[in-house]
Length: 331
Image 1 (spheres, rainbow, N blue to C red):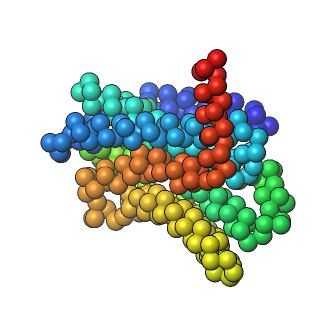
Image 2 (image 1 turned 60 degrees about the vertical axis):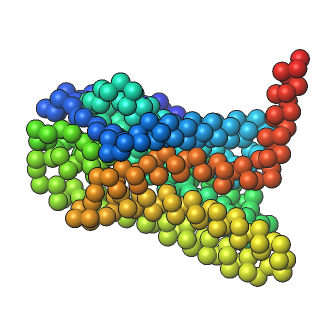
Image 3 (image 1 turned 60 degrees about the horizontal axis):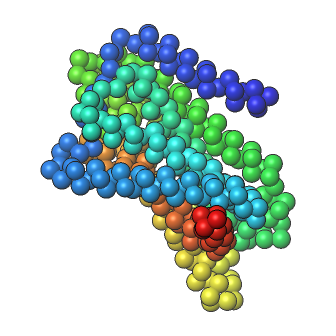
């Protein structure tokens, strides 16, 4: 049943947006971009491209290592592989279009293209929210109940948590994309952003959007605050267990790991909450663009560094693979 749904779902989404584009009277939108208010735009553009490329490379490397190394095929690394996949797709959804607009000067985007950006952004961003909560639970079980870890983090539970993260993200993305583009839009179709983001696009609507904003707020509570509360609860229990450790070195290592994880979580959730849950009266286009860049471009490059490449097992697998690649190149 799951295989049938997974094969039908992409076609249903594409068909839905095709119908939406044919039924919407809006001819298209203009994305003003990320660098239109600064004179240092060539340098900033090069920096963003470098960060995006580094993110794609780091996350692709993580996927390759987890796929190739048998000892990395555990629940923790399976969740990390899904995080890397989401980050790669998130960067690929935003950066290529932004780069093409900047280089060609053609900044138009069709309603269907705009809807697809909203859909994929919320699918991946929402899915990552729940996936980070699942990863925090995994770390809680590993630290607080190590002997029960194989039972509490079984492959079946791990798969269910992953599928649930993707499904909830996709449901939120489909609902918000469809609702956003169902509004009639005014004559000015200029979006002061570098991609289509629901709160920014809906500001152009020539209709009462108060109900939509209320529903969006409820969705944000469910998609952001509920997983964040689970993450904070898990790490609070982890820190409580760490404080009871007798080894000073073990406490220091655990504190360093938890603090780095919470730093990335705080950056991702903080930027998303700032974008989607801030009152309309406090909104600023420049602030929105900078903050959106954090959770769509900058955070994906930090995830493999913080969660994976600092790990001893991952570094060992990387050295092994590099040795194998070096031996193949000499042959």
